[in-house]
Length: 440
Image (cartoon, rainbow, N blue to C red):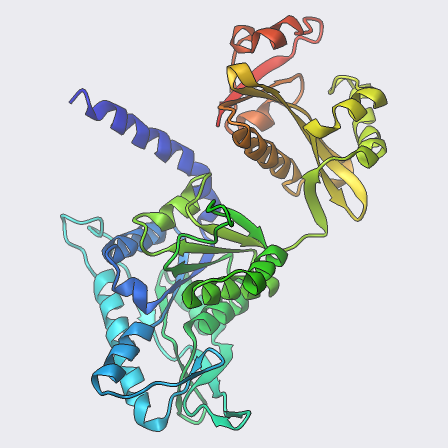
C-alpha cells in the first residue's frame, strides 16, 4: 500500500492539471483520422477507450476512417496488382467491390468497438451513439494525363448540415473514405482528403491524425512539439519522410492553411498518445499552427526603442521596475518579444539562477491596444520553454498588480526565503512585491 500512494498522488496531480484543457475542449469539434493501420495496431482498443473519454467530456467527434492495408490484403489475396499514381490508388470497376468490402469491414469493426459497454472496461456506461452515412459527396478524378482513375475520386462537399444535426444530438459521426455522387456512384477517396475537407467545412477546432510515427523529428532526433505551417512545408520538401508520415503532415498543413486553428500528428503506436497530446502541457506528438503576421522571437538590439515605448507607461504607474535604455541593451539577450507588422507589442524576460535551477520571469508586458488575444500566454509559454531548455526546474516572479493572472496559470504564492540567495538580497521592501513560483 505504501508504494501505491505516490502513484495515486501522481494521478491526482495529473487530473487536476488537465482541468484547464478539459474546460477548453468542451463543446469543441474535433475531426480525427483513424487510418486502417491504426485499426490493426496493438493499442487500438486503447484508442477506442480514449475516444469514448473525449465524448464523455463533451467533445464533438467526427471520425474519418481509412482502409489502405485492408484493401491491399484483399487485392493481394486475389493476386491483383493495385496501381498508384500521384498518391492516388487507381480504382477500376472490377476492384470497386473489393474496396467497398474492406472499407465496410473497418467501419463495422469501429462501430462494434465503440458499442462496447462491458463492466470491466473503460467503456462501462459509455453508451456511445455512432452514425455513419452518405455525408461525403464526391466526384470522379476522371482522366488525368491520359490515366483513367476509374472509381477514384475527390471530395466535392461535406453535408455539414446533416453532420451538425447529429453532433447536436450527442452522436459521434463516422465518415468512411468512400464518397457518393448525385448519380448514385461510389468513389474511393483518400482518407486524408476526407479528413481535411471535413475539418475545413465543419469549421472544426482541431484536426487530429493518427500516423505510424510519434510526430515530426529534428535531424538530431528531438521531436518537434510544434511547427508553423511554413516550417512544416519546408520539411515536406527537404526531409525524407515515410509515405504515411508525409501524407499525414501534408494533410495537417493543408487543413491549417484553410482555416483549421490547430492540427495534431500523433502515433497510434503510443498508448495514450491522444490524451497526452490534448490534456498535458508537454503533449505527445507534433502540433501544426498557421504562420502569423505576429512573430514571437528573441529580442535584438534594434527592438530596444519599441520595448521602451511599451514599458515606459507601466513603469510610470509603478507596475514594472524602471529599466534604462542602457540596461535593456545590456540585457537584450534575456528578452523575447512579439512583433506585429514591425512593431513590438509585447515582451518578457528570463533571468536564470543556474545554481538553484530557477529562473525569474520579469518584465512581462503587452501593449494596451493588443490585450485580450492570449499574447501574455504566448509570452509565458515562450519563457517556460526557454527555461526548460536551460534545465531550470522552477520559474518565479515578483509582482504588485497582476497576481491573479499568474495564479490562473499555475503559479502559487511563496515566500522570500524560497528565492535564490542573490535575488533575496535584491528584494525591494518598499515595493512590497508578492512572490509567486511554478514548477516546470
